[in-house]
Image (cartoon, rainbow, N blue to C red; front, side, top):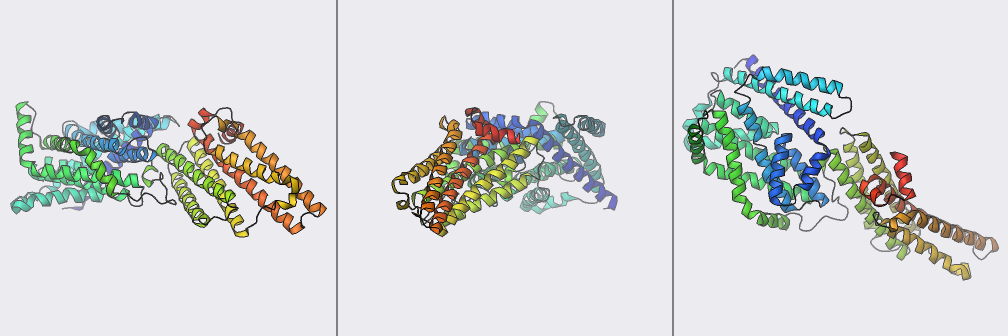
Length: 553
C-alpha cells in the first residue's frame, strides 16, 4: 500500500468529514428558530415526535444536533421524556438517509461534476450573503460539495487498496466473521465520532469489492452501535434529563443492532429478492442502505409497545434522588453548540438562581440572618453562579448574533446581582446585628414598614409575568422611601443621644445592606424579564423593564 493510496484515503475521509460538518452546521444555523419550532410543536405525542425526529435528522444530517435539541426541550419541560424517546426513534431512522445519499448519488452519477458546482455556489452565497441566512446556506452547499468530493476520492482510493488488502479472507473465520466486521464498523465510528462517515467508508469498501455483502452488513450494524459512543460521552457531567435521553438512545441502538444481527441472513435475502422483483439493480451500496433503514424501522416497531416501560425504567434508575440544590438543573454542555437553545436553558437556570437567592433573603429577614442553613444555602448559590458563568464563557466561543451576545452580557449582570445579594446576607450573618427597636421609641414601626416593603419587593420579583410585577417600579420606590424615613430617624436618634454612635452606625449598616439586598434581587428579576421576550410581552408597561431593555438592546 503506497503513500499515495494512504494520502488519497485519508484525504478523502477528511473531505467527507469537513463536508459533513459544514453541511450540518450550515443547515442547523439556517434553520435557527425553525428547528426549535418544529421540535417544540411537532412532538406533542410520541408518534409526532418520531416523524419530527426523522424529518429534522434527514434535513440537517446530524442525529447529534437533534439529540441536543431534545435534551434542551426536556430540560425546559417543553416535552416529556416519553415524547423525547419518540424523537430519538425517528432520529435513528433519519440518520440512515446518509447511506441513501452515498448509495444513490455516490455511485450512480458523476460526483465531481456535481461537487465542484456546489462548492462554487456555496462560496458565492457566503461571499455575497453578508450577515443573512445565505451565508449558512452557502456553507451547507459547500459542505454537500465537499461531501461528494470526499466520496469520489474514497472510491478511487479503495479501487487501489483492494489489491493490497483483502478483507474477504476473514470470511473463512466462520462464526467469528460477523463479530470481526461489527467491530470494524464500531471502531470506525468511535475513531471518527460520526456514524455517517463510517457508513460512507463501509459502503465505499463494499462497492469496491473490499468487503462482500454480509461483511458490509455486519459493519453497518457496528456503525449503528458505535454511534451510541457520542451519546455516552455527551452525558459525562450532564443533567439528569440529558442522561436519561442518552441512555434511552443507547438502549434503542443496542437492541436494534441485536435484532439486526439475529435476522441478518433473512433481512439481506429479502432485500435482494425485493430489488430483483422491482427491477432495481442489486448494487451492494443500495442493498446496504435499504438494510440500514429496514433494521432501524424494525427496531422501532419492536420497541414502540414498550416505550412507556422504557421511560419508567429510565426515570427509576437515573437521577432518582434528584439534583442537589447547588447543581444546575437546566445547563447542559450539549446545548452550548446551539445558542438559541443555550439561551433558553440559561434563562431557566437564572430564574432558578433568582428563586434560590430570594429564598435565602426571606429566611434571613425572618430570622435576623441567623438561620442554620444559611451557610450551606450560600454555598449552593455560589456553585450555581460559578457554573452559570462557565456556561456563559463556553457560549461566547460559539457563533452568536448581536442579540444573543447582549443576552449573555445581561446574564452575567444578573448573576452578579444575585452574588452580591448572597454575599451581603452572609456578611450580616457574620456580624449578627439585631434591629434596635427600643431606641426608636414610638417610631419603631418604621422598621416593620421597611422590612415589609422589602419582602413585598421580593415576592413581586418572584413572578415576572404577572400584573403585580408591572408595579415593581412603584414598590421599589416605596421601599426606598421607607428606608430613607428609617435612616433619618436613626440619625436623629444618634444625634439626640437616644442611640450611641457605634450602635447607630451598626443599625445604619444593617438596614442599608437589607435595602441593597432587596434592590439587587429585584434588579435580577427586572433584567431577566428584559432578557426574556415572554416576560416583556406580559408586562410591557414596566418602566424598569423598559430601562433594562433599552440599556442593552
